[in-house]
Amino acid sequence: MITLQQDAEGFIRMNRHFPESVLISITFADGTTEQVSGGRLNKAYDDALAEYRAQNHLDAKGFSRSPAKRKTSPGNKIDFVKVHPGMGD
Image 1 (cartoon, rainbow, N blue to C red):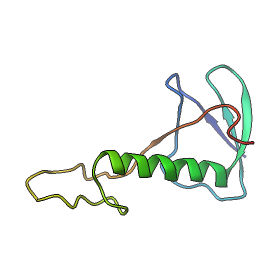
Image 2 (cartoon, one colour):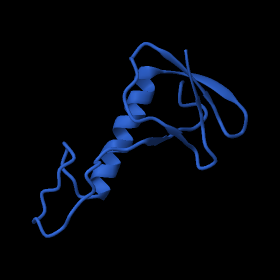
Image 3 (cartoon, helix red, strand yellow):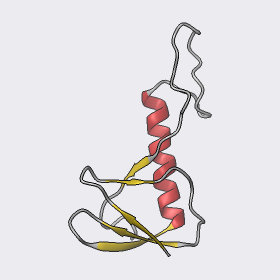
């Protein structure tokens, strides 16, 4: 089992997908603990990544299609995902 800790801002560190069937224990900032499937966290990761790319005007693969005048960060991925109690339901 994988154990993750939520930070004070409500995020967990997640820079990759977990196996779909693995159970992940998340300890929230308020002290509660919940088990969430890897598939559920992968969905949260994908949603956060899509939001990040939309806010930064990147396409679905993370590339900027604007003119070459502007440089974008070479790391077009995210490392933190927002979580909340009850998301495992």
